[in-house]
Image (cartoon, rainbow, N blue to C red; front, side, top):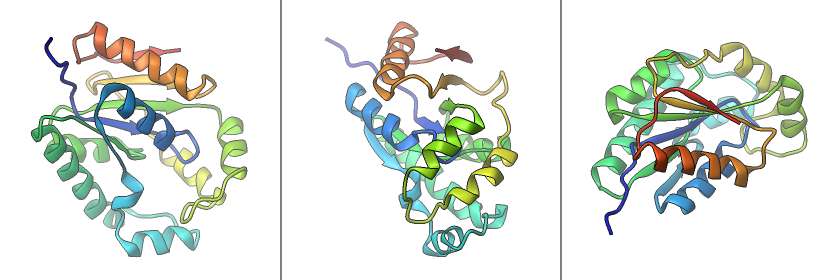
Length: 181
């Protein structure tokens, strides 16, 4: 039996959408490595966000470079990789693709009301709930030339994982832009 190979995958979206939950569940389902991009932030970024100050592009650049290296190294190792990363703007996704190759983005989407209730109900070490509005304002929709799957967070994480699994295995590990839900 041949093992299915998958492109490097970034589970993306604003705070509270479920990137870490869905990413880790999907990694287990596909037998891939999962890394939470938050763990790759420099300490200065964590401190800034923890103080309620949004990151600027200069702050994000080294973080995105590290995520890009992680995607490249994970794909090069042959085992496959999934990284949770907000990837809110096209230029950030371009930077990830430039370093990590042909990346598939899984965009977890939901209404501002759903996201606000999720963020309000959790404690995050360096992402206070007040930061959600700035993330929603910064979010740029994926374009048709960016391989991606849109996922509706009203579905359970298990359902989302199954939807992605079916999309990936039915496409032989690649997928065009699509909305799943």
